[in-house]
Length: 368
Image 1 (cartoon, rainbow, N blue to C red):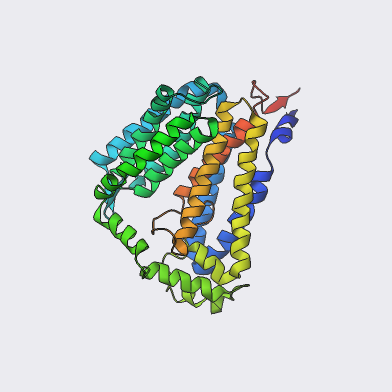
Image 2: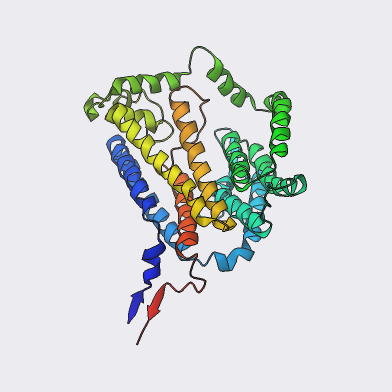
């Protein structure tokens, strides 16, 4: 007889799916209204994401920690390969084409889970003391943060590169670094800002110029009109003119937040923000339970920071408070790459939480 180990139900964090599933359902309803074809594709992405979640949830990650550096360096090699063998789309060389199947792979997306796991591995192997990491320890971990940042920046993909570097140093901030190091880092950033700006591509500079100019870009204008059209309670599908007549660009992906408010109004938009806010707060609150488990704490903090950045940048971009960049809303914007990546991350996280008291990793009990 086969019985499920009850400890799985005891330690599984049910708060996460309670907060994430409504986000997925609302997203699918909006995508379905916009396009039946996109809705069918999104169902495929949901299936792939679910398989990815189950795979990482059942994987004995703590027993396989020794493989994490290898996975990290394989991803670094893939990022190097993009510069040599990469496929260009819309002026950016970010993809690798898999031979024979004509399927493209974006190494920067795969890098996100590997990046967070690598930092968690390094922090567990060398945890900070009471005063936090010293300068030498900080530099050592910074190498693993800055290397993928530079490679992704060269593609060019400024948005993903900034996501990784902010997430990496955000994890270190939560884990603990000497205060003097942060002060020095902030000063260095101010000094380096003009140099970094001059190294940007022309289209990246244009996005910044459009952002700081008094007159917003066409995309942002249409987004603000859609938000205003939604009012407090939103419009019916036939009355959501910005989306229905395709004035709102990329309504199911980059600007889906504006689409949400046009359909469900201020109440719908605030409800979505609250779901994300509760999820981020819940993840960060876990650090108190994890205590000295630096590996799980680093992964939890990394995912929370990643979601916060995604949500903040996307919403600020939609209302004209940030430059327009291709950063989707987690579990909400149409597309497979981001959805599958976050399902992998949450599969890893649930694994670390559910089985942290079970070193044997026996998922089922078999009795004859």
